[in-house]
Image 1 (cartoon, one colour):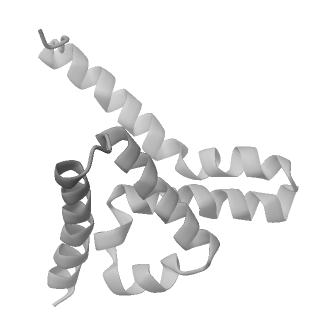
Image 2 (cartoon, one colour; image 1 turned 180 degrees about the vertical axis):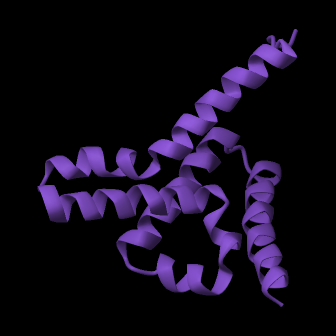
Length: 118
């Protein structure tokens, strides 16, 4: 049952993104930013954790979870270091994920010789 809920929640998030791409003129980059913002807002209002307890990886793995991690890091850093934490906390909380994404993108760019479409 656990895997079914993870699949359904994660699939619903992906389906919403796909519907936005197909039915609107919103670019995929703006949809990505919107999903990150949704994660930030859910965390800011304290709604993300109850959803994450139920949905587990279904909401944590998509980009919504990344936005929530950014917000959680910033909120925690503001509480411990003050206003400067708003600028540093989110990056500290997500540094491993960002570094992995940049590193793997570079590695795969070297392996697959990426180039611009013509």
